Image 1 (cartoon, helix red, strand yellow):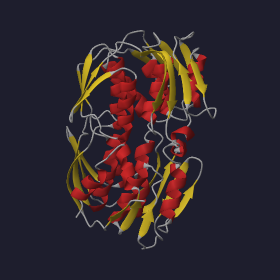
Image 2 (image 1 turned 45 degrees about the vertical axis):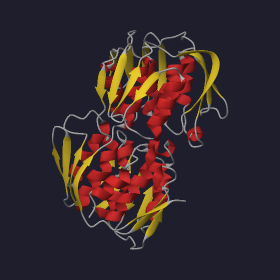
Image 3 (image 1 turned 90 degrees about the vertical axis):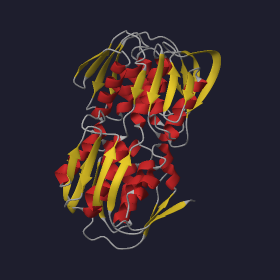
Length: 422
């Protein structure tokens, strides 16, 4: 196994330019494929997850031309049509590809098998597939009920109204929303408290950029009009706000950094992490196309992070540097991500002598009695575990197993961290 050693980081200073947002990249690639006309997508993230989407679209007959700074997508002007041959699409562990493609293919023409790596086959998709069945669409489980792999026979729906549980993953609602124009209109009712609400906001804004019309009643119901996707010709994908959290946290602890790619007008919910840092005491300056974060005393916090569960993970290593404990609540979705992230964090932070408490949907950390040992962290094939645990190098020399797992969303993460570390 490849192991990366990080020496103690004494201070942080410099500038960082973020790669494109994974969430925006994969959504925009799919919408461009379904739209009328050709779209140039600028600043598409180059990562394992976006590579999964690009391969899938090419398999499904979409004409793509990739350059270093952009991807040109020739839209199909509607749903996919692959004829009578069954097509097997391997989506790795890319949830932002699996869920929306499942819904889009269910109302396309053809027979499709959607599969992925072992962890993807452990990640639930039942609420989405049951909603698609409620619409009269044909989706079958090929192994375990509620989980991939799936067989999808594309057809038109018998209903245009559906109810879905919103408490497991916002990607299920996102998938239905994005399929709405292909279904010639759709009304979605959300049962329970919708998780990760900002990601649904992001989806709707992007759909509207591609000409879709969505009416909503808060987060309880959505009505997608029977209107086609139309290319905006060019769309710029802003920097990844989730990735920004690691550099922002590092600066809050040990120096100052300017982060380019997000700014005062970012559309991503994970940018809300900066407000949490401010609550804890960090100094944050918002500019048009960047943010500057500066070191300051950090207080502990108890905070509900249901709206931004990915960004919430960065608070775990940050607890090593706060005056008082850190408690993160309403994060049950961590348990169905790339790994069981609550269990993984309990395991890894305990190696540091940190007092950790956890439950179904929370984790609490008190680092006041931590040890001073050099530690080797497991990453569980989870990119965010690797990036989070790298921040412990602000306190001591550490080792990280399987650092290449960051290729899922942020291939040059460690080189960027090194560039601002002193």
